[in-house]
Image (cartoon, rainbow, N blue to C red):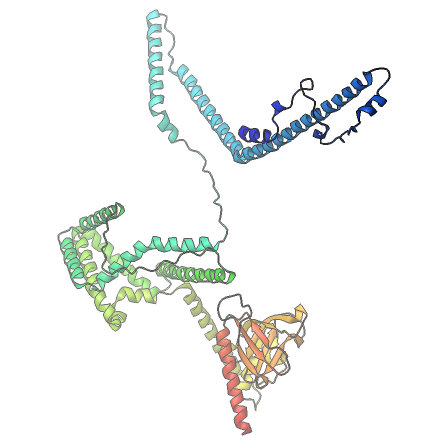
Length: 578
């Protein structure tokens, strides 16, 4: 910093060049920056003689003194200005250096460290005080009553010194280990959650894929051994395994394989190129991470990751729910088989020696893995009939399957009860079965035909009895309340009905006759989002712009139903006209 100041300070005239007033020579009047220079008119000798003071040369000496005074004042002002400029520059650079020092030395971290050190010092002082108190309490307890003889006093002093030395030696040797067993309250540390970032998301997905690669390769090799992908490798593995199990070397064999795998990993880490795998590894091309992603790419990335996470979590949930239902007697006939098997294994373990049990289990595992599974995979019908573990696992239900079964049983009971009540009740004559069932179909606000002011024959098709949730976008309207309406879309034999979810009159509902539709097509409401969209555009003669039913989860199913019914109605009307 001093070097910078020296460079700035001596960029103009140095301080040594500003001489004192007494030593400064006579300079010209033009050196002063602020004062107006005094111009002395040139006069000839004749004029000088005429203007000369008759009193003598004193007036000329006084004029020269005034001129010298003006010159010294201008030099002094220049010197003061130079000093002031240098001082301002020094102040500016000192402020910059102070700001940098404040940024480099964070006061908050220093304060926190100081508080931690103070707490440690207080804890150490408390421990030292406790040790001193314990020693002071133990000393009078070890003291014995004084004896009148001087010899007894000497022995007590010696025993006291010996005990204090032993105590000191014990504290020095084992005090640290004793302090390790001191109970302290656990510190509850709250982990800071990182904000959602597309780059961090892709990086974590790649890390997960790389971390799971060894496990997936191990599973692939095991399945290749069971499938006899390489006949020689599977045959050698089968012979070695059966001999090891027969001679009681199964556990040493697995331990030796683990040691061999670790040795190979050590050589690979040291730079050796060792690749052994039954299934040839396929190197997938690694895409370089993109620095700048558009909004559409980020949204598509989030959708892909969410889909993978959904499928992965679904598989894990199915496995855990099946295991839970197996042990909770949800399927009694399946859990009963497990119960009998456990009882048989318990009785066998009580009466048979462990060598025979281990031999039987090892032989069964080898034959099942290398031979039976190979046959069952090649013959699916045999597997569906005789593979007991596979049958048990596939027949175990998950919680969603149990919920569907319970709903199905409840609906069956309700249907049987309704049919009985319907048979017992008196129905008016002259009404067909379809007309009668259409009366019982209701929406959230009443009967279907009353909500939409239709005939009693009109009722939703079987595909959309509960309707499709969507929002109606009427681009002919300018008010926000009329522009978008949330509700449910139904399809009948002749009409397309939209029921608004807002409470009010039925004027907010929309009924479109299928024969009045001029065009129907899939529509994408927001072009920024990826995919083909979640909307259906319907054009009619009464609207300038097509009506859009957007935000439909089952868009494709609804479009196929509406389009098929539309084609059916139009073909029927054209055939009737011809």
